[in-house]
Structures are given as structure tokens and as C-alpha cells.
Length: 351
Image (cartoon, rainbow, N blue to C red; front, side, top):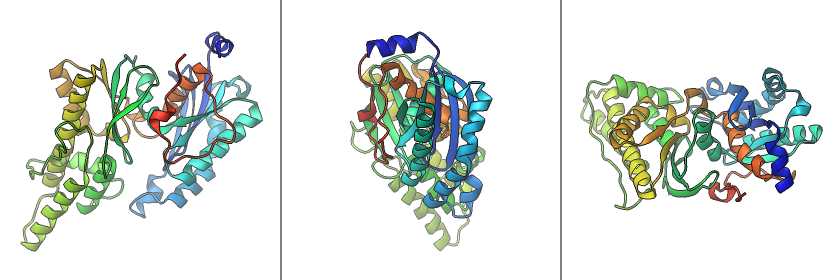
């Protein structure tokens, strides 16, 4: 391990990263876990709009169609010769198993062909360390992860060490947004539409806050989603017209208040030096604004990645994989796609 780490520290490290966990195909080259030399993303939103959501089999086929060309283009745009790459990183989980498999097969093929190490990487670790692409991280830190499939509070005592202290018990924030958007007649993906409607609303329909137990850092969105549907159904039965934007604002305020309060409480309890906002819903303007105002009031340092690093992308996978590369923690070539990959178990070993 010592010889490996001395070799790593003596020269720049270039990691080719692949991300295919859901409906974005992305390939990037990242230098030393911080500098993005290329970051290509092929979105499938237009394809899945017709179905009102992501169809796993269709997503897998779309990954297959573009992955080879994107690998070539990412390397070309980076200005790095294939033989100068240090390692090949790939999202191993969580995600859609068929989609993950496409990326893993592509990454293994590249690694074998070039004689480079393979680094299976955790998708949520990627979202968290997307912040490292633009900020210096200080520990201990707290991460609020909000995406289509995840809503979690993650404590990091030190670099690459993850402890899950809270999670959703049912719907994730992004999932709830899409379901509410559908009820309000918005197209897929619904989150940005609900966010826009909430920002433009002049009125608000009050909706409940779901706090759960007094000391819990868990989240629950299914009851709030049901409350939205109840408001819309009751208005319809009474023959009343209800402004969709007012419902969107009520829903967003209910979601954001709970996320902000629990995140700030967790930072205080665990003595965190920074709060990191991570995941696709980190692009939500309402959430970003509320966290910024509250953290400024509390004197807390808040880190939010630029918009291009909030949604699924391979640059964030390269940033997280560098944690493993530094320590010589590489994957075997029989590594499999793991939709249930544990973030805590993926934590790095101590140097």
C-alpha cells in the first residue's frame, strides 16, 4: 500500500469515469479528483417523456447506443492519451441494474484493453464529492442528499467515511415531486415545473409538515403527496377551481422546511464544519434559496455544486473514485452491478 501511495502522489492521476445508473449516459476524465478535463452527458429525457417516467429497459438500450462513442469523445476532449490514464472508474450502484451493467461492461472492457485498474464507485458518494470539484471540503461534514431515488442525511467524520443518520421511509424527494407534478398536469420530469410554479405563485395552499419522531432524522413524503391529491380531489368534487401554482407552492414549502430544519439540526448535533447539498434536487431553486438564507442566519458554511454537477454526471464519479485510488483500493474484474450497494460499506479504509 505504501509503495502504491507514493507512486500515486508523485504524478498527476487521470481517471476516466463512467456513469450509467439511470437515464443519463456520462463519461468524464478527471485530474486528481478535482479538475474536470471533459464531462460528456447524453440525456434521455425526451425519450422517457412519452412514458411519463424512466423505463429501465429503454434506458439500458439508450446507454448501449451511445457509450462507445462517448468514451472516445471524452478521452479526445480531455487531451489525455489513453495510455496516460491512471484508472477507469464506474458507477457500481445504486441504480437500475440493467443500466448499471452497461457502464460496468464498458468500463471493464476499457480497463482490460488499456491494462488499467478498475474502481467500482458508489453513486451517492459521487453526488457528495461533486462538491469537491469546486470547493475545499472540511471535516467533519454533513451531506443532505436529495435526488429522484434518494433522500438522506450523511455524516462524514473524515474524508471518504460515510455514516447514514437519516433517510426517507418511503418516497424520495425527486420521486414525490414527479408524482405531484403529474397530478398537477405537468410533463415529465416534473420537478423543475413544480419549482417554477412555486416561485411564481401569489397564493399558497397550506399543507402539513411531516416531522416524524422528535429525535428522528428520517423523512417521509408519501403522506404529503397524499395530502396534495386530497386537496385536488376535494376541490374537484365541490366543483371549485384551485390554482395549480398555489398547490405547488404549498407542497414545495412543506418539503423544503423539513429538509432545511433537519439538516441544520444534524449539523449542530454532529459538530459539522460544513453542510453539503447534493443530488439532482440540489438544482431546485426553492431549496437552494431556503438553505442559503437559513445557513447565513445560523452562521453555517453551505456548499452547493454548480448546476452541471447536481444531476447525474461522470465527473462526480471521478471525484469519488479518486478517494479509493489514493489509497490503492481498486476493484476486482468480477465486480458486479449492485443496485443495493451500501454507502457506509463503500467507505474508504484508513491510510
